[in-house]
Length: 296
Ligand SMILES: C[S@@+](CC[C@H](N)C(=O)[O-])C[C@H]1O[C@@H](n2cnc3c(N)ncnc32)[C@H](O)[C@@H]1O
Image (cartoon, rainbow, N blue to C red; front, side, top):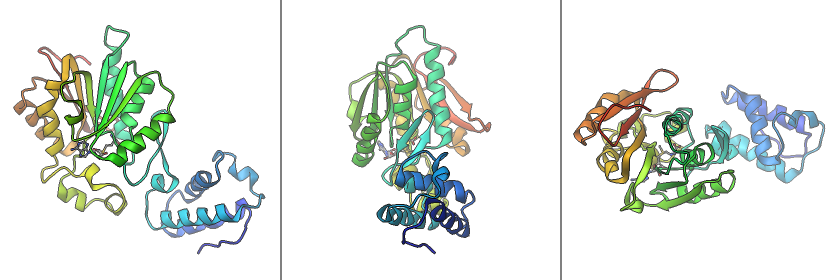
C-alpha cells in the first residue's frame, strides 16, 4: 500500500489518504495531514500549499510507518504524539490515557468554583491520577491557584506530565509526585481536590472498543469488578486532605452516578451533587467539606 521512494508532499498525502480511507478511517485526508505535520512540522492549514515540494526520504519513511500504525487501528493521538485539551496541545504516548472532551468539563467545574471564591488566590489544588497532566496543567494555565500538585501511581505518566509542564505557559507552582492516590501528599491540605480516576468495571474494559482496549493503559481505565474502587477510595480519604469549604470534584461514569452518590453518603459527605456534561449525562460529582448547600 505504501511507497518509500521520494515523492512530492501532495503525492504522498494523496496516497496516505487513500490508504487510511481504505482502512475505514473516516476523516482520512485530515488525519493524513495531521500525521504529516507530526513528522515534518508546520501547520496543517499550510501543508497542502507546499504540495509540489519533494520530501526527505527518511522523514517520508517515518511518515509511512505512522500511517501504517493508524491504518491498523492505533488512535490518532498516539500516532501523532499529541492531543488537544482545552487551551493546550499536550504530548501523549501509550503510557497515558488520551485526554477526553468530557474531562474538559471537569476542569470547568473547578474553575467555576474558583471564580465564586472571594479571594484572588484560590490556594492549593491537588489533581489525583493526573496521567498526561491535562487537568493539573489546565488549572495552572486557566485558574488562579498558587500551587497545583499532580500525582499518579505511574512513574512513566508523571515523567510525561513533567515534559508537558515545560510546554505550558503558567505562573503557578507545579509539583508532580508518584504514588498511590493520597500517599505522596500525606499530612497536607488542599483547597480543591480534583480527579478523573479509572472508573470502568473490569468487564467493561474487556469489552471496550479495540482502539481503547488494545492501546490505552488498563491501569488508567479499569477500577475493579464494580468500577468504583478508585472513586470509593478517594471519597473515603479526601476529607482528611481538604481545607474547610474545600471542593472535591470527580469525573464519574454516567451509568454509576447513583452508586457514586451512595458511596459518598457512606463516606460521610453530606454536601454533594451530581453535575451533567454538555450532553446532559450525569458525569461529575461535586462535594464540599462543610455543612450547608452546594453553591459552586
Ligand atoms: C482515567 S486516567 C486519567 C488521566 C488524566 N487525568 C486525564 O483525565 O486524562 C487515570 C490515571 O490514574 C492513574 N492511576 C491508576 N491507579 C492509580 C492509583 N492507585 N493511584 C494514583 N494514580 C492511579 C493511571 O496511571 C492514570 O494515569
